[in-house]
Every structure is written in structure tokens, then in C-alpha cells.
Amino acid sequence: MRILGFSERWEKLNHLEFTTFRFARKDRDWAIGEQVQVVLRPRSKRRSVLGTAEIVGKEPRNIAAGSKLTCPHVTEDEAFADGFVPIGIQTALDCMYDWLFDLHGKRLLEEPMNKLTLRWIERI
Image (tube, rainbow, N blue to C red):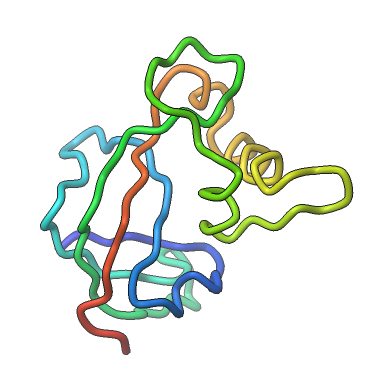
């Protein structure tokens, strides 16, 4: 079973179903029906296993407004549901883009992201 890691304990993890945005894996991309171990801080001494979830949905999304990707853009509602909140004049989508750009840089302009919808099987 593969690990799906989170660096923060987002509020969305408290719901039966939640979404996350991930790039396609180089070895084997995420798949609908796949069960994953959800882990908080996976590469830390403070690692914490949160439980097991199943991927129940997968859709390509474009996060960068200036890119030439043809898949649908992430909406403000999707960014908000993913845990990003507007700050000052920045929308939830702006905050999401900044967060992801800090992690992935130009890759946001070149590759679509997977919008994964997960459903908890077991929470620890």
C-alpha cells in the first residue's frame, strides 16, 4: 500500500470524503480504487499514520492561469474545499497557487495535477 502524505493536519481530513491535488507519479500514477495509507509528516520523526483511504475519483486539473494545459482549471470552490482560505485580497485559489508554486515551481505550468477524491476506510 502506498503512502499519501500531508504536511499539515488540514480540516478536510476530518470529513468522510476529501480531495487533494497531486502530480502524476513517475513510477505508477494514482488510480481509482487504490487504497492508500494517509500519513501526516511522512518523512519526519513526528510521522503519524492517520488511517487508510480509497481513491474514489481522479480528474486532471490546471492550476496555473497562464499555462497552455487544456484540462479544466481549478475553481475557487475547489481550492476552498481543499483547505485554502482567502487572505486579504488573495482568493483561496491564489493561496493554493502560492502554496503549490513554493513546492513545485514551474512544474505547475507544464503538467496537469490530479484532483484526487478519497474516502476514509479506517481512521486511526
